Length: 266
Image (cartoon, rainbow, N blue to C red; front, side, top):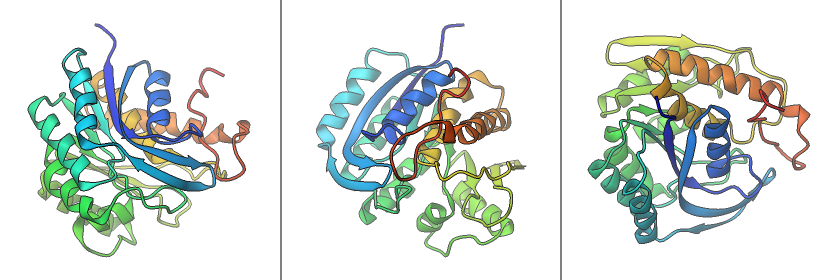
């Protein structure tokens, strides 16, 4: 069996901890050949986002066409899209030439709290990209924004909101419970006929920059290599847990540093 080819569609992080740089590291760490399409040039570091330069939608399409016309893409991760017109362009192209596995990371805010998605793009994300997603991976504020409601405050509400997102067209939803205040960080995987709970102890580190990007790209990398979403989520979370545990061994920046994507190697 040939190696998996995966594509990330996302914005950049020149400090290397999040965005397209984190996706490329994750793909490589999990044995997948990485390709990429840039949607936005983001001046950011471990302390926050300083500036965002959106890529013209026509050039986003040109990048997509370059990759999809030449490279067999088995899985795609969709991250930061910045604006509604970019989101529409990506939705249009993926509808025409959709890889089998499509993981939608509903990126709206950076870890620092800086906005990475315009309000007008939320509706496009919900109405055009969600129905194309094999898996959508919202945290609690992102799920609430998509649904137009208050964020879940417990696991019962998490499950209910996950079901509402399934009703909007996603094939599977991973509701991420990191915003809850429990000792463990619970995630719920919901599909049309199943619900599964995944937990991991919270790691005592402030170096969590890029965790959402890295988890969604791990799901995209591993799904073609696993039997189902349950196995995929289990192994992706185990890898990310290791990346968090080893994050303090890195010395990157003076703010919220990155996780250690290559903890299994060095």
